[in-house]
Length: 86
Image (cartoon, rainbow, N blue to C red; front, side):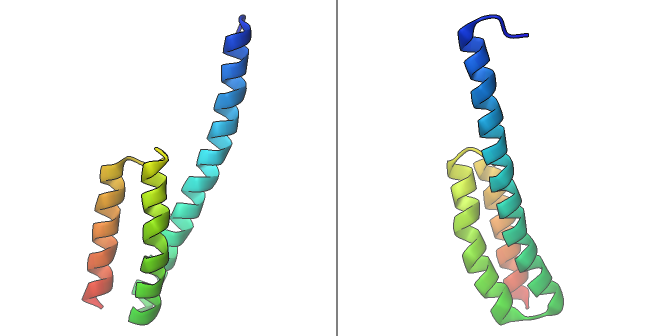
């Protein structure tokens, strides 16, 4: 258990940050899912539109430290390849 005021504050902050980061990750996953669903349906226009919307979200996640930048780069690359292959 935290004994010092600093440690108690840090726990509160960590909990707040965890909630925010969880929401961000969920949002990013939803955007990625939209691209994947459009790719599976074979709808190139919808897939490219979904990819255009997903890329800034993913980049924002990397900038905020929610996801590692290389992970984001890899996922963007793979999604872009899938959309281009349609």
